[in-house]
Each structure stands twice: as C-alpha cells, then as structure tokens.
Image 1 (spheres, rainbow, N blue to C red):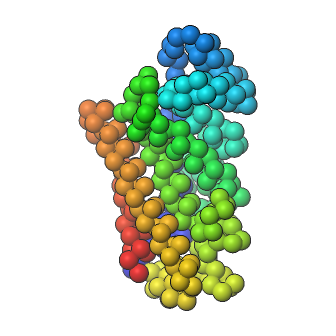
Image 2: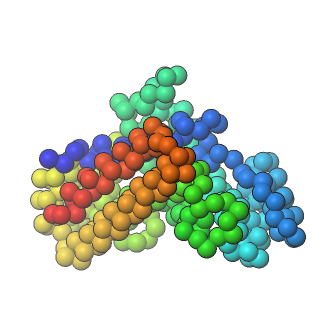
Image 3: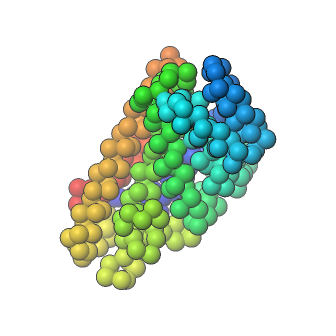
Length: 279
C-alpha cells in the first residue's frame, strides 16, 4: 500500500528543513565566498558581493551576470546567481522554518502541513529551483573554473535539495507551462495538501495506490505518457541528488547524521515515486 500521498508532498517540504536546521544562520546558502579573481572580474565580484551584503539583489544579479558574460564558468558568479534565485523570488526559508518549528528543540510540527509553505508559492519555488540547478550544475558537473570545488559540501547539498524539489514539482507540471499544479495540469494539490487528479475535467482525490491505479486507467493515453515521462525523469534526478550527497560524505571524510537523514528522505521519496511509475 502506498503511503498517503499527502504525506509525500509534506515530505517534500520537510526535506528543506533538514539542511536549514544544520545551518547556523538558518539560511539555506551559508554565505557568499570571497575568493580573489584577477582583473576586471575581481572588481565586478567585489561590487556584487557588497550588493549581496546590502541585500540589493537586483544590483548583485547585474554584476554577477556581467561576470558570467566574461567568464561563463566562473564558479563564484554561478554560486551567487544560485543564491539570488531564491532571494529574488521572495522565498524566505528562515521564515518558513519559523512557521513550522514546534518548539525550541527544533521539532517539525507535522500536525498542520499547511504551515510549511503557502501553495501559492509553488510557481516561485519551481522557477527558483530551476535556476539553482542550472547555476550550481556548472560547479558540480563542470565546466567550471575550480575556484569553488566540484565536491564543495555547501554547493552539493544545495544542489541536491534544489534538484529533488525541482523533480517533484516537475511531476505536477504535466502541461509544461512552468506552473506546477496549475489549471491545465493533471495533478493539483489543495491548501490542505490533498492530492487531486484531473480526469475529464473532474477533480478526483487520491490517497492510496488503489486510488491512483483506478484514476490512471481513466485518463487519456497522451496524459499517461506525459505523467510517466515526468516520473521517470524525476526518479533519475533524485538518484543524481543522492549521488551528490555521497560526494558530500566523501568530501567530509566521514558520515554526517544530517546528510544521512537527508539521504533517507530522498530514498523514501524515490521509493514512493517508483510505486507510481510501475502502474
């Protein structure tokens, strides 16, 4: 029996909290790097870094983009653009964390999944995660200038989280318009995180593998292909995210309990997705 699908979407957001709670400043990105770069790029970098400190993200983005025009593989600028992706879209992970913490011990309040994040933010999350994956992949997979190393712990953890988030949201964007769970999509979720599937214009709630199997048999072949394609790509990307966490453990020369918890969450999400794919 498949776990309650509402819990799976709840799991998606709790994934963020595992790494946020591990950061001393409750910020997803641990801070801009100040590695020196020679020439004009160094001046651009200094200006961009100062703009980030001043929370002038529009100005910082302008200068990081100027750096990437000169040096597309500049790891510092790619990292900066990844950080801006969330800040520019108004996604405040520290605020989200404050809303879902049950007490000072850092326990997640699972009694109200709606506290995790307003469903209205899904479009912003999807766009931001796309951007984070795009920029950090240059560092993780190359080509990159190597100033920030491919096995950097911070980069790989952030990349793994963004890739997993993007993978799950892409499943809900069956019409490919960049708006997951939109009016034209097969999947939708309510403010209470109930999972709905659009079947011939009618919204049907699904909770179990039996519900999903019944609904899946009634949708069009074109929609079936779209769903299965998205699911297969999502599984592939979750595998990539898990691989990056293995790189983190190797880089740290030991096993981190936080990273292992994150891996367990990713693996659980993967297993549930696999059960849907095989229908």
